[in-house]
Image (cartoon, rainbow, N blue to C red; front, side):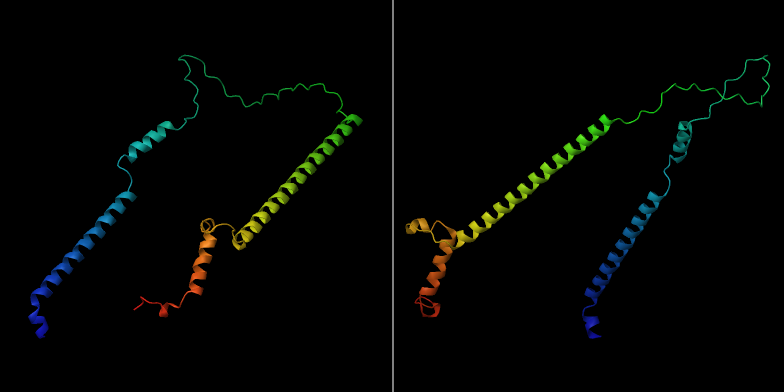
Length: 183
């Protein structure tokens, strides 16, 4: 209890801040709901939009009005006779001749030969790609293992040689605990 009476002003300020925060969140929530309801409602120009859409719709074709004082035609319930169709005089269907069969067979053979040539090219390309990747992998493996001969300056231009030099230095030097300068 003493704590509450000792810090009554701090508690009052905290309560006021909490109330203000609660009020602002409630107002923001109401604004979001209001905006959402407005988005759901129909636009104000909805009636104009509907009228314009009705005007754009195609209207059924209505014959023009008859001139005044003209006799009205009587509806006829008789059917018009079906129109006669003219048939084209065509001869009997063409029979395939030996030349058609020979042309078809030669076309099939030519297509099969073309496809065989394409498959051979594809096989050669795959083999070439395989050889290139194998050569690259071999060169990569050998490049890391092969020591570069030449002067010391030339050897230190290669990253693998620099790594090897650091490893050898650590192996051949005194242990770190025995080196002078280490406290």
